[in-house]
Image (cartoon, rainbow, N blue to C red; front, side):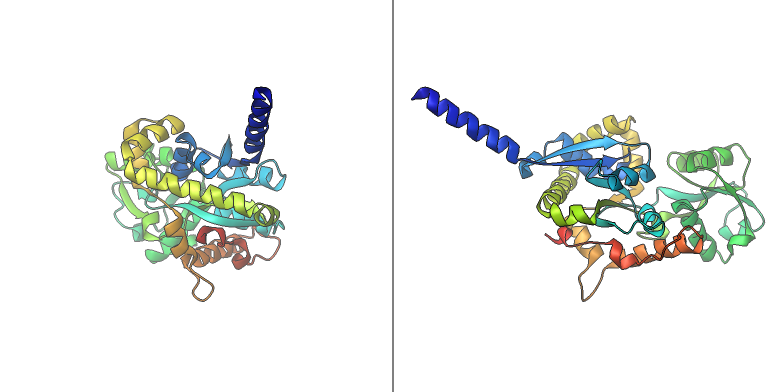
Length: 317
């Protein structure tokens, strides 16, 4: 009788273990994914009966190809990369959750003698051409009454742009932390930041349309787990910063700087950003701006319908 009971318990345990849903998430080290990382390390996904495996990639743009190939279930990437992929003919991807937005982390910084964007006319500006920082520069130039042709754009990465500014090789740079702080420390002027253009630079959880249809319940669990991580960060900031410092391989004090320039979203914010069918939220405007930029730069070979790239149903659960 005892052996039968143990056999029943073993079968029940095995069945329950097999019943736990599993998802594989592709991401790169970035503070904006903090809620998901905290949820992973604090085992908040397990409370949703969900096993989440994270796979680390080099950058934001490197997660979408493995997603399309079926190697991962979800990719964390930017709306800009989503629009690029759609413009190249892959219309099979949708953003289901907005993870974060740059809120000052990306900035146009100039040498000490340049105090206003209008003074950049004819000057060299380092920027990553055709990427999100290029969009930020165009917004800054418009706000300063300049046209793109009014400046000499020098194409380089955000990190190299910051270094070039400090070395005096360019007059201004569109860069990110820690280069923004370093430029300030040497007398540089921050002329324009992503905080001036809310939700221009957005990152999202992206899936294929097939995954969205087949794994809706599992994806809803993932979003609830991320939301729990978002709440944990608010309730226990010190513990959360320690987790993020270890993940990003930076000092806890640097986490404070990174968090100050970024805004991480939970389910409540997503409901506002997505809105509803009668009154779509600002996420649709952000997606349209990104799609228009991609098209204007000649980066799209296929039409892009920004409305089809967002699938907000799960974020409303």
